[in-house]
Image (cartoon, rainbow over all chains, first blue to last red; front, side, top):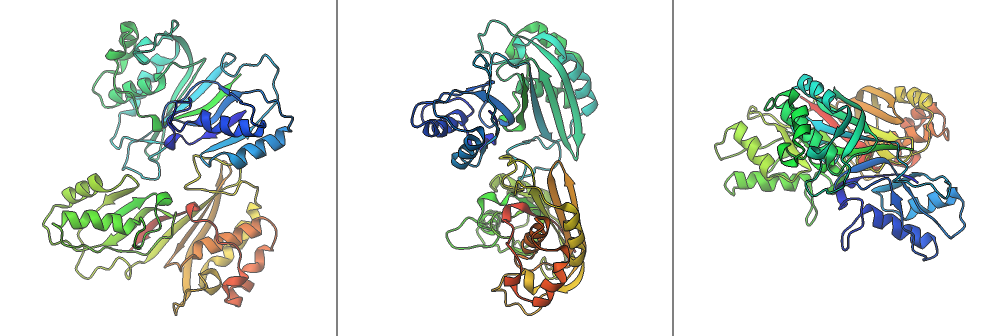
Length: 239
Length: 239
């Protein structure tokens, strides 16, 4: 299933008791379509509170026989208006939406001009100028295979923190900076921590060539602010 | 005062008892800045429920002596995050934000592709293809000076329904159609009714050259659906 969501009114993707989450909303509807038999969905990965998605992916099993066309229609009729199913296809029994990810693409947007209330849920309203050319130079250091311990959550005890970033680009249009990362996977808070450091570089508070030093430290405390969730969008997941 | 707002959580611009409106939110803050002495703001015109604005304009009088810089800062600190003051300048005592309008620019956005939850508050999620070339041909008929009785609210008893449209353009990018109108003023629901008729033309349900016939009828019932408020944005007001 390929689906999109506006993260503004969710406590993130993953189910949590008493909180509104994307996973819970979708599972509720799927379970009802499945005649009450509980459906669990397995996504390509979680997204944090406020984070948006355009082409998130997930797999699930249904007992109920239903055409893909009707399934999509039923889902979109019952889902709230901040979640939408773009497409559903049948996959092999051994397909896994999380373990089989080849690439993920994330985009982070920063408004460097006057605060814009129309953008506030999808673009970080930073509202000050940034040195774009320094940020672009810094961005190059993120490309390639690195241990991203410095750029993930301090509580993240996951063994392997090595990821490969295939591309990292920065464009600017009408005062909005868009930073796009494509990698074989991302750690918790990784994009937002990388962007936080890029903002510090754009503010000219640290030199653009600080990134290799930060990689070497392997310590979250050495990096800078974690950029807010609403600027981040999961653009695509490729298998 | 030049200000912007995201219309999604408002019952329109104009004050109404018991409802959340843009005018009320701004007057509350201004009155408090003015030491409790009631401030009334006069805008370039109302906008309906859900309608957004990027550069709405209004005038008001303050008793309290305060620099423009501090006034803007105080307003933006106390206003909710869906309203923002872009700029404040001092004007002559005889300036009037409504009567002195020279041009107003409105933009209407229509998504003709898959429903997108991230756009739902600012782009009409029509989600079907439209015949753009017919809509463009139809648009030409709106340009110039016309009696817009057919395209305003049936309850609108205002004497003069003649307005001059200086420009009417249509562009399309990534499946989003943007229709922009610049006029010396607009009647209630006028843009949304014109867009409703343009959509019918784009659906090929009525011919593109129906517009002059509709003008002649001078009857709201002869036009078509009123396009939903969330697709509409007041882009600028020029004096």
